[in-house]
Amino acid sequence: MIHYDVQYPSSCRVKTLATKKKSNPGTIAKNKKAGFEYRFHEKFEAGLVLEGWEVKSIRAGRIQLTDTYIFFKRNEAFLLGANITPLHSASTHVVADAQRLRKLLLNRREIARLIGGVQQKGFTCVPLALYWKGPLVKCELALASGKKEHDKRATIKERDWQRDKQRIAKDYQR
Image 1 (tube, one colour):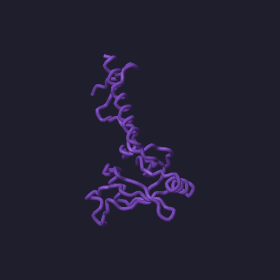
Image 2 (tube, rainbow, N blue to C red):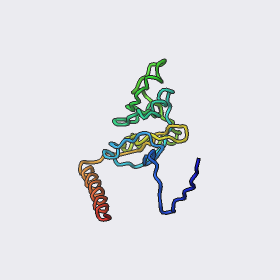
Image 3 (cartoon, rainbow, N blue to C red):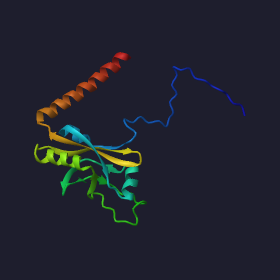
Image 4 (cartoon, rainbow, N blue to C red):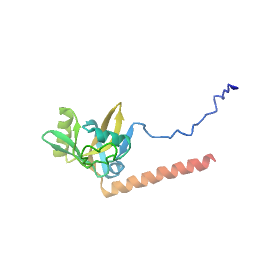
């Protein structure tokens, strides 16, 4: 067997076929609709209480955060409306409820700040993303206020301008 020792110049980049570009490798799911519907004022990080089949389904990417919200009951925070579709092979011995309440793990000060914002200031509490932090699943949530119609139009206009600007820059480089 002949072994060739090939050295590439520093300016040459070698790409493998298996690499896929992701914004953040730990991100599981994002709530994109929340960014359009709400203006965020303060962000928090919370842990999630999950069952074993839910973690397996999340690893397989079977979760949706659309139309998900957070509500408070007896000084505890719960995630409501998150849909975790069970795997057929992982949840054979349990009755899996895809839309069950999931408790959020926050400390007392954070819960008090969230409840105060929701009750006094008229904000709402919205989950933004789920992501891995080591072996744990974390939920990023925010105190948010609803956008008015003209704010939504401004967001669309800004997004279209950014897209056009990227397109112009790409055409200019050619």
